[in-house]
Each structure stands twice: as C-alpha cells, then as structure tokens.
Amino acid sequence: MKFARWVLIIAGVYGMIVISPLYFSEAQINIDFPPAITHPEYFYGFLGVAISWQILFFILAINPLRYKLMIIPAIIEKFSYGIAVIVLFSQHRIHTMILSSGIMDLIFGILFMVAFFKVKPEKPKENLSN
Image (cartoon, rainbow, N blue to C red; front, side):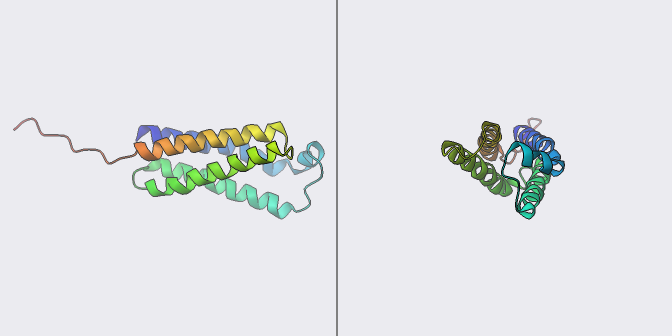
C-alpha cells in the first residue's frame, strides 16, 4: 500500500506544480502558442477539472484500499490525456513541450495501474504464541 500512496502523492504534487501556474499564464500562452485562446471558459474549466483530479489523488493516497475503485477513473484520466496528446503530436497539431506532459501522464497512468493491482487487504498475522 506504500507504493500506491507514494505514487498518488507524487502525481498530485507534480500536477499541482504543473497546472496551478497556468491560471496566470493565459497571456503568455497566447503569445507562445498562437492562435490566442478564443474560449477562455474551456481553458479555465479544464484547469479547474485538472486541479480537482490532483486533489482526488491526495484523497486516494490517504487510504488506497478504501478508495481502490476510484483509482480506475484516475487511470482513465491519465491515459485519456496521454493518448490524445500522442495522436495530436503525430498529426503535427501540438508542440513537443505538450507531448512531454502527455508522456508524463502515460507514465503516471501505468504507475496507477500497478498501484491498483498492488493494493490488497493486509493478511492477518498469525498468532505464534499458541
């Protein structure tokens, strides 16, 4: 269960570090990656959902066994973004920098899958004093 806790905590911390600054980056994104964002509600909506998932990762880390089934949508969240980014990159529609974030999500998705299968109830210890 330690593995699952650490993976979920690291994913949450990484996500907060990467996503939070984007709230203050719209103007720079418009300059660096034209065309400018024309629907900021989608941009900020995405950020809100992404931050919500990072918070969920922290909650899952508290008790991975209790919340084990919630790791499944977390895996889907990681793979959905990672796969979409690879497809978009193969179509020359996104920058290499975005590809790296997609690859990180795929790595976390794989680690979440490993964590899911490693989380099992602890076996009761035998009483050897009898």
